[in-house]
Amino acid sequence: MENIIDVQNLKKEFKSYSSRQGLKGAFRDLFTRNYTIKTAVDDISFSIKRGEMVGYIGENGAGKSTSIKMLTGILTPTDGKIVVNGMNPHKEREKFVKTIGVVFGQRSQLWWDIAVQESFRLLKKIYNVPDQQYEEHMKDVIETLDIGPLLDKPVRKLSLGQRMRCELAAALIHNPPLLFLDEPTIGLDVLVKLKIREFLKRINEKYGTTILLTTHDLSDIEALCERVVMLDEGKIIYDGPLKELRENWAEGKQIQFQFSEKATLEELQNLTKDHLVVWEQGESDLIWIASVDSDETVISGVIGKVTAVKKIADLKILEISTEEIIRNIYVEGAVRHG
Amino acid sequence: MEYLSIFFQYAGQYLKTRLTYRADMVVEIFSDFLFQAVNLVFILVVFGHTTLLAGWSKDEMIFIYGFFLVPFAIFSSFFNIWDFTDRYIVKGEMDRILTRPVHSLFQIVLERMELESLFGAVTGLIVMFYAGGKLGLEISWYDPFIFLLLVIGGALVYAGIFISLATIGFWSDSRTDIMPMMYNIGNYGRYPVDIYNKIIKYVLTWILPFAFVGVYPASYFLERKEWYTYAFLTPVVGLVFFMIAVTLWNVGVTKYRGAGN
Image 1 (cartoon, each protein chain N blue to C red):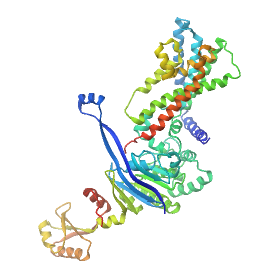
Image 2 (cartoon, rainbow over the protein chains, first blue to last red; image 1 turned 45 degrees about the vertical axis):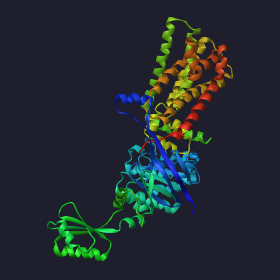
Image 3 (tube, rainbow over the protein chains, first blue to last red; image 1 turned 120 degrees about the vertical axis):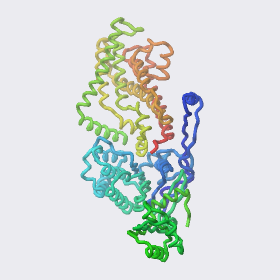
Image 4 (tube, rainbow over the protein chains, first blue to last red; image 1 turned 135 degrees about the vertical axis):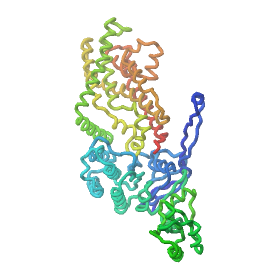
């Protein structure tokens, strides 16, 4: 299948002034300024195929928003090539944006003072959507997002969750083949999040909409995306299936013991010296965590040896969460490949 | 054509919103009106002491003032971009504008229009008819068309200057006080330029051509033949300045840095 997004050696630099200290510095700034060039996006390349749902993750300031803004035609790249939907987003902006939908979680597309449906009508006009197409498509969208009862309320009277669902509907008025979502679930409660995820899955299946999603909430990515692109300091540090990321990083399991009497590290290490175990103290000196390989004999061996000697109040076997994996990756700064 | 229909959709929506805050709108129109009345009183006071100013009579001055109000009303209804840097660059609203398939400047015109300012044009017409009546001016059949052309030219001059200033925001988002200053300079255009010294006259004609909003086009209707060349240059100057502004704008958009989030 053809690539819907094709990015090659994309780069974005921001020039900024740094001011000197003190009054004397301010005077010197009047004549010569110190420039610092900050590279927000540093030579990244990737492509996305039609119908894919891709998670775009990274810490704050990793270059997520900047690259999304270049992909949507808002910012001009410093260098590199972008082709999205067969067009250069910045050069043919007005024609190009008709083929994409954009939701910025922290910015509203809707008019604050007017009823939601009036906003929709204005957007319908702006995108020049024929009546019939609008009726058919939006009826479905409104029903799935369950925003029918909100349509005649002004946006300022909606709760965040209600507004976000309306924002999503607004981004889909022209039924774009490509949808950019920047933090769409920020600050939303679990139920609304679930509803939005379900909805995104549905339009992906029904219309084959390609979705690029940035989020801090990794559960969004887990629920929706098979592929993740991970950025750090403007560079792509991982691009591939989420599953692989988990497999390569979450090799082990953790066993959490809660003892009814005090335990020491030495004592525990002594007990399990036949196995490869890393012991770590939990929240108190009663709680200890053993990190082990995902191997049945090791797990049962460790549990057997420990419980034979020490009395335990509770026992948990934990899988390492994606969140932890990502944290580990950022700490190490690179991705190991299996 | 498509833009026209988008415009009407926005204008309809605008009126609908404004009509729900009726009291607000009445107060605004009233305060606009008062502001213009004060300006008129100023002219009357000046002429309380003298009857001629550099060869212009009181009624002629009032006529020029009345004319000036019409393009100015059009400008202030559609080009409320004095707070562009704050509203669109610093707060990052430009991001939203740029994700829509309509020219960005046109969208801002639509979002920021204040149609009630058009009432200023009515005041202007009343003032012109009053002064024109006293001067015994006659109206030919083609005058309304020329009037329309000159008014549009004048409004474009204003729009061109203020759009050009707004584009500074694309390069630097620091606060400047240039906008209010420019509003003040704009007011000089409604008095005959030959009462000023040469340099100011030159500036008001060719650099910040505010004279093309008031005195030059109005002199056509006052039958001041010595100014006719300038009067008919009005649409040309308007178009040139507006085109420069739009070009600057289009370049500026490519320099837009976005607000960090």
